[in-house]
Structures are given as structure tokens and as C-alpha cells.
View (cartoon, rainbow, N blue to C red):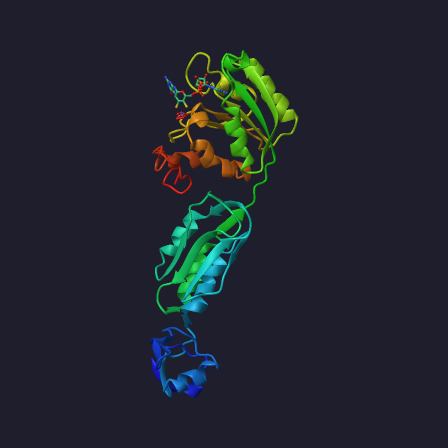
Length: 339
Ligand SMILES: Nc1nc2c(c(=O)[nH]1)N[C@H]1C(S)=C(S)[C@@H](COP(=O)(O)OP(=O)(O)OC[C@H]3O[C@@H](n4cnc5c(N)ncnc54)[C@H](O)[C@@H]3O)O[C@H]1N2
Ligand code: MOO
């Protein structure tokens, strides 16, 4: 801290709040601690009776919070994200388009572990809309060592840690299994659920077949839809352990490589994800997707719609938070399910 004449204070950082009192008009903080003095401030400060000011001593090795937060802006500014001006050392990151928020969680952890700075975000893999708030970030002290910010840059690596990935899939093929549906014994109440969920991501069901419980026919239908060049193929029902549950075997026989059959999520334990060599996903949706408001399908759909390649390991961690509480009014994704 040092004392400077107010006329010489431009560019210096104030060490404490300064209150302006004008009788009958105002009594409020006019300049906040940390404010960088501008030429326009000088007459105001003089009118407040401040001819001398305590300011931070300029030090090439130290950064003001507003300068330091620019490092965090760079660390956070990936594809399709934007950010505002620093306000009291804090900036807000927002989405520039609709899509899936994707965060490098390990890098986020690495930056936050350095201390004296913070980045708080929404959960990765959640669907977001243009203009949605994604993250807030700030420097904790008023001034911080430049080397600390360089360290943060290094910890974050060469790619920004926050991105919004636009949805890329457009078409889907739907295979509704079950002899009871094919024979018309019951009405199909599953397909509309799937069609609506896909529509929310701009995906249209352009082929729809009812092969019953004939596993060879299910496999053949998958092959035909694949040949049509659809972005994804979904099979509903027949995913469990009954003798008539033929879907997992039929998907396997199609040549798609199984990533997982089973997931540590309820509802959604009997979910199946597989990919053809070219990346076309073939998905098996268990009966719960028809009746439960939110399931494994809702958790994985943003990743599928953005063509984010999903690995078996991506499922293992889902158990923690993988239990839907079945609230009367479903607020998913604004709840702990799938986080
Ligand atoms: N012994 C076990 N039983 C069950 C298990 C298990 O592991 N062991 N898993 C349970 C879980 S979890 C789920 S989820 C369901 C899986 O159901 P499936 O995918 O096999 O569904 P289905 O048996 O084919 O059908 C269940 C029920 O829903 C009706 N259904 C199916 N598709 C339609 C449709 N398009 N429209 C209307 N209704 C449909 C079907 O007729 C059945 O009544 O299994 C648990 N059981
Ligand atoms: O696949 Mo069942 O999923 O959990 O109710």
C-alpha cells in the first residue's frame, strides 16, 4: 500500500471502499475496494475531499483481479461460449447456441485445486439453450501473483475446458419389438415417448418397424435401417431376461459392437448401447423408458445427439447419483439424477 496524490492516481487500484455523501442526495459507496482509478474519477474524488489516496503498489509480478480473471476467461472459452465484462473480479460464461455443455472435469478440478481462484459450472453433458448461464469464475484475493495465473493456464492445458456442442443427428429408425404390439393385442404406447424425446434434440423418426419378438427379423430390420444411412437406430422393449426378450441378442447379431448391456442407473438398468464401425449407434431401450419420466435415455441422449462417442467407462461412474427419486413433479435435469 502506498499514498499517492489523487491527480497522480490514474491506473492505480484503490485499497478500500470510498463513500460519497451529498446531503439529501446520497450516502453510498462511490468507489469500491479494488477499483482502478480512471481520469473521469479524479474530479469526483477531489469533490469527495480525497486529495490523497491509498493505492496498491504497482508490482509487475502481481495482477489485479480484473486482469487475472482474463486468464480464467481464456481457460473457459471453448466452442460456442461467450462471456461478459469482469464485475468485481467475476465473469459469467454463457452459451452462444443450443447444445450440450461439455466440460473437461479433470482440468476444472486441476485449476480449482490451485486455490485463490475459482470456476463454478453446471454439470457436464447437460442440454443448454442459447443465453443460458454455464459458469461463473473469479479470483479470490484482490491481487494475485502472475505466476499463479500462468500455473492455472498450464493446469488447464491447451484446450479450453468449457464447450457447447451443437446437436448433430437428424434422423432415427425406431424398431418397436413385442408380439403383443405386432398382433395388436395392446396399443403401442412406447413409440410416442421416444419420438417426443428425440424431437427435443431435432431428431426425426423417419423409419418405424414392428418386427415382434422374432430376433432374426429384428436383426434384419436393424441392417435395413443401417443401409438407409440413418443417424441412429433404436429398439424398444424385450431388453430383460424373459424367454421372449430377444432384443439384446438381435442387436449383437446385427454386427454392432456392444459398449454396454446394463447400466448402474434406475430406471434404466437394462439399457444397451452399441455402435456400428462407422459410429452409428444402435440402442436398446428397456420398458422403463416408456413409463418413467426420466431414465438413462435422458442422461445419454445429449451425448448421442451430439455424436459424442460414449465408452463403457462413461457408464461406470453413473451409479453415484444414478437413482431417480421419482418425484411427483419431475424437474430433471435440475436434480441430482445422473450427476
Ligand atoms: N426377472 C427380472 N425381471 C425384470 C428385470 C430383470 O432384470 N429380471 N428387469 C426389469 C427391468 S429393469 C425392466 S426396465 C424391464 C425391462 O423390460 P423390457 O425391456 O424387457 O420390456 P418388455 O418385457 O418387453 O415389456 C415390459 C412391459 O411393457 C409392455 N410394452 C413393451 N413395449 C410396449 C409398447 N411399445 N407399447 C406398449 N406396451 C409395451 C409389455 O407388453 C410389457 O407388459 O424388465 C424388468 N423385469
Ligand atoms: O432398465 Mo429397468 O430399467 O431399470 O426399470
